[in-house]
Length: 244
Image 1 (tube, rainbow, N blue to C red):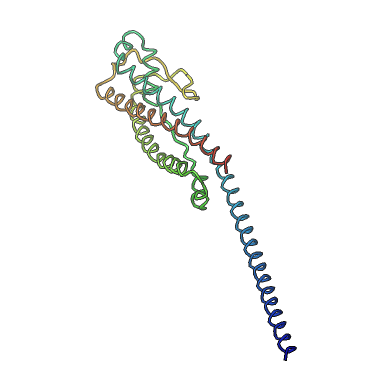
Image 2 (tube, rainbow, N blue to C red; image 1 turned 135 degrees about the horizontal axis):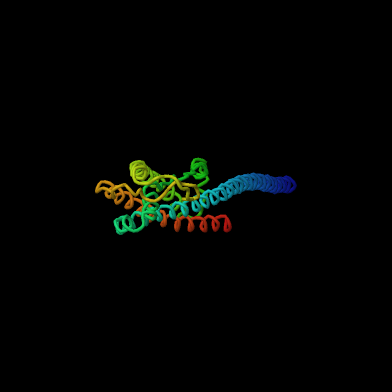
């Protein structure tokens, strides 16, 4: 009887050991699978972050190109605005004393226009791929969204200025003999003194120059703000890559 009881006790002990062993083996298997999934998930996340950083590096290049373009545009629109202001304030005096300068300022005020090179390809790729969600800095995301939404506004301004330039160019053809070459915004432009036998600008001409000068002044103002913002975006993009 004691032997049977002993054997039964040993069997229970062995069964407990067996259950514990199977339980530990099960835990090891679950832990191994969990670690494997974690490593796989982490590798996938690291890969996406690498893709994101590569995209951000390309975006830095694009924004830097925008910055160069904006600085050029700011210079040209500032020049056109200043020339228009000179005509409005001193035009009649120049007509009497310095037709050479009057012809130049009229040409600059009338024909200058720019075209924004809007390169949104990398930003759209970042956004459409979902990689933009991996950007830790929410402020940077907001900066980028604001930047590229402003581009449409700049294009509309340029479109208005382009129409005014088309109209104002007729004044140049009428009042200025285009015989001499001078470099303007990096390109040769024909200009010469105001025609000796031509009357001074009409009220309609002056109004057009006044209207166009106002758009140049405003465009230069918003582009100056854009230059500051793009510089901040470049620094923030670099920090995002550095501290990732």
